[in-house]
Structures are given as structure tokens and as C-alpha cells.
Image (cartoon, rainbow, N blue to C red; front, side, top):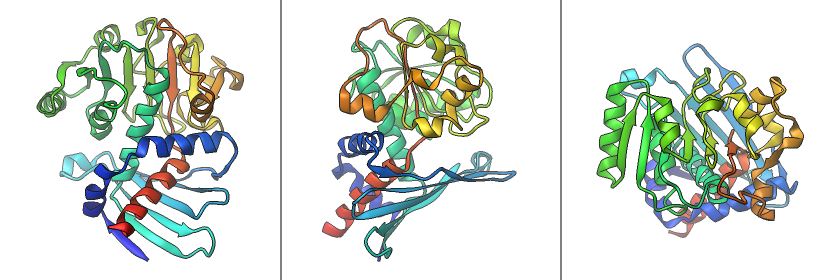
Length: 313
């Protein structure tokens, strides 16, 4: 059994092209090649724990991933997220590796999924990237878009002026041109690729804010009570994409829209189908939405890649 630390994982990640691996995972999932049980959750007063697990049928490994979110940690100088992935042999059940990534790989695979969504759904001419939120994913979602777009213009929205200024400094230091705002209308009027990254339970973007030609990747709403975008946005969208239609019945923006009868399941297509059949954006005026709640096959693909990288080195 291998125990792979976060430090080792950080050293291995630059040598791994995770986008095609995770694209393949999404395609496998949508083609019925995966065994992915429902998400396990433990909700407590101060934090939430998500347990995702699964395999590709006939593969070598299965994964169990534990990821937590303790959103008050930032006030104590601690990261909001933590966790690990455990890779098991699908043949014997033996533990192949414990990846003590402290939620880094969850962050990476989530950011990669955002980039994949933009690859197939965002307009060709991205005028600005709108980032809703100022945390870890707010940074990573922008950075991981590099293979998809050379746009360096970011407009970032947040509630806290100090965190907005910190985000602006950090991303400016990385070569981005950053505008900070507390006005969501300003963000939506400036950006045609928007990524929402908050744990909000209140709508942040309303339908009247969204202009034609906009793509929204909504990845903050991963629980039944979370919602970042108005259900009416999904009603008026030309394409609504889910990473998992099954999971979307119970969580995320699609869940909220289904509850309000804004859409039906027939209005939703899975990201894996978009990838395998090439049925993404077809013109620059379409409004598109990708609702990402996170699927265990993403964890499996990135855990396997790190394990193979660690055992080869």
C-alpha cells in the first residue's frame, strides 16, 4: 500500500494532463460504463462531509473519496476544505493507495470539469471571465481555463471588500487583468463566461442579468439547499448540461429548477454525452448552463493518474 502525501501530489500534478482523463471519465459515465452509488453526506453544525465512491466497470480500481467543507475555518487561519482519496483494487479489494491530498485533488478535478464545460459550451470569443466568489475555486476555475481560452480579463464578484482586493492582487500577480465588483449586474454585463463558486443558498444571478451568448458554469451548488442562479435562467437556456442527471434530481441548480417546474429532465443533457457526441454550443447567441455537482468517476480518474505517477517515479 502506498501513502501519497499532499506534497508529493503537488509535485506530480504538473506532469499529468488530467483533462482528457476526466473527459473520458464523463463519457464512460454517460455511456453506462460506471458504477457510481448515491453521494453520502454528513451534515453537522460547523461543517459538511461528502463521500463519493465508484468505479468503471471492469477497471483495475475503485475509489472512495472523503471531502469536507468547514466554512468557518477561514476565521481561524485554516483551509475550508480537507479530505483524502483511497484507491482499492477492483480485483481483490486491497488498498492500493491512500492519497492524503487534503482536498487538493477534489479542487483540481472540479476546476478541470469547469474547463471541460467551457471547452464545449462557452462562446468562441470570450470577452471576460466572470468569477462569482473569492475562494480557492474562484482562483482555480480561472487558472484551469488556460487550455480553453487565452482570455486574461477577469471580473470577480464578492461580498467582502477585503477578500475581493486579495483576489485581485493574487490573480494580477499571475498575469490576469482583474476588475473587482460587488455589483452582480456589472459582472453579468461584462462577462460572457461566468463561473459560480460559492456555497450560497440564495440566488445570486437572476434571469434578467444574463445576456444572449453567455455560458454559466455553476459548481458551487452541490447540496439540496444550495442555489446560486435563478431557476428561470435554466428555463430560458438553449442548452442545460449536468455532469450527472441522476445526482441533479437531488442537488444543484437543476434540482432547484425541477422543483419549480422551470425545466424537465428532458431538457437536460449529460456532459459525457456532450463530449462523446459533440452536441455543445452551436452558435454564439445561445445561453448555456453547466450544473456541476461532482461525480466519483472524476475522483477515480485523477486518483489513478496520481497513483501511476507515484509508482513510476
